[in-house]
Picture 1 (cartoon, helix red, strand yellow):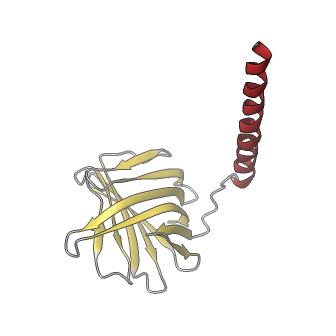
Picture 2: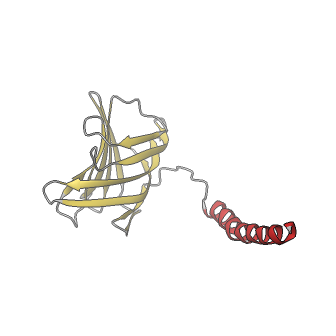
Length: 167
């Protein structure tokens, strides 16, 4: 009687393990170790459309009063921009929630869209700084956010964002 129950359970467990195990192995093979070099590159998905800037990326870091600005200027004329704003923060290699227009937020403008988009307590995101080297002047990390334009009444979603830049 126990054999009738145990064999189907073992077969089910073996089948599920066979399906799951290759997924774990593949993900570890596909995730390379990221080494920041200051290569001035940026990539992300803008509303599921790939954006890649490998030629004309310029990073600018500004400390002004109690604010830290990370501007990522893109495009041949630097007409596209993502600005991360952090208040009262000693910048370090960690994750920042972009969810408060008084403390931490992001603005985004893209030349093919005539609006400027901003995160707030309703439309938020995150910035992960993986490398912040003041001596070599390299900053690198990843980001994702949802931002809204009041003027255009429009929402954008940026995901899978990565940057590696000199400042």
